[in-house]
Image (cartoon, rainbow, N blue to C red; front, top):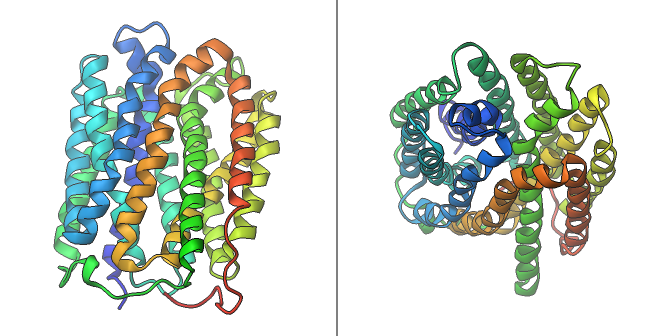
Length: 395
């Protein structure tokens, strides 16, 4: 039984909103800093770390409640909670009020990945493609955050960049309430088995690799998505200065890069995960090394390059969950993985401003190349799939 098309559309839109909300502040941080009396944006950036810490820590209870209470109910909490938290951010008058509001936003945003994605995948016959489309939607939310915030900052003000998506999220919550069918049983009672069976030792190894790879992937994701706007502003000084134009350029980077997830999703349905994952991770290393020294339009091209590899690596962790983990436990497994990876990755957001202030973006990009090397080493330890199990077996 497939999900109703309207419900699937709202679940994909929810992924777009989830990523968009978390990056509005990073895109508008220079304007917010000036409004709050900070001389440099780097000094305000650490106040947003609570959002990403709560995004990680909140994934554990969200995943547990998704399995035991119901995914539909938790998605309603997500839509309405995100909308209210965004409006709270718009009302902040100083850095600490913004830190609290962003932390609340992070807590509600934690619901989506361990709940919304398993809900979308629970009846998918081609999970890789479904993950790819969902990832494309999420990354379009990142692109929309860049362009919306750029125009809002220029013409209305940074507060409007929180208000408009907040109202949209509340509207989506109402539509989801009306359209999503009630669940007849909690996911924990379901008997849908994993597509690929692994021995206990292989499962333990897979979960360890998945979690460690998710940590390095989350570090790169947060360093880039939270720092790309200011990196572009710095490297285009004297070439492009208009915030709306820079926002459109950054949106273009994310929009083009987003299609990598769609392509990777299709490949995941046809091929074993390990070789694909390792290839994409290895491609990250030269992209970061070249970007460290690039300026102007060369940087723009390399930003597309390294974001293609970062976005392209994202579907693999969700694909591993749906391929190797029974549906009854997927939300909890995803929640625990996200708690560890984003809990650690919140350090990236906290340290981004101070690191750039003291060492510059070139040193940060070299550090990201080193993180990509660690990712490749970790992914190489993934267990091989049993030869007797075809990669295209339906879920």
